[in-house]
View 1 (cartoon, one colour):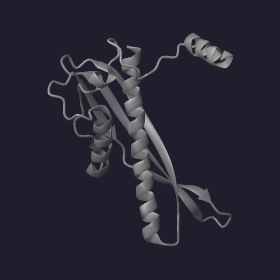
View 2 (cartoon, rainbow, N blue to C red; view 1 turned 120 degrees about the vertical axis):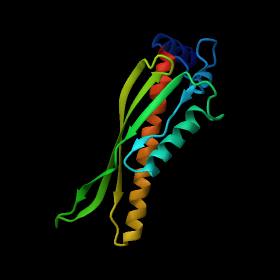
View 3 (cartoon, rainbow, N blue to C red; view 1 turned 90 degrees about the horizontal axis):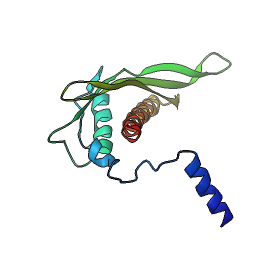
Length: 164
């Protein structure tokens, strides 16, 4: 019992607030359902569509907002692939995918920019003897990077609304 009381006092004193607690001042699902996400500016439409769909599922799971209040503009970079692990003979045994997305969150009516940030993600993958398997691992690493970027954008927006 003493441990529970200490934990409660610690959490109360550190400024801990439940992020998803529904209060009249903090109804996150209502606020995020007012966000419009135009198509992502990207080098290749496939990854932009995937990023946009991830965010739509997280921010507006009930469908496109009728009267959006906010706009989320995103520009996604192409995946950059670098050698990650080099064997003693000088041949790479793994590579790393690096991606970034610059995004701007703004009000729709007056186009006031609320914040602009950049989300970055890296995902390693191994080089195998089978070229098809290596290509599948690379594609999975890109998808993991896109998922990571969508999570960063989602939590930046949630943090904005909870701190506002």
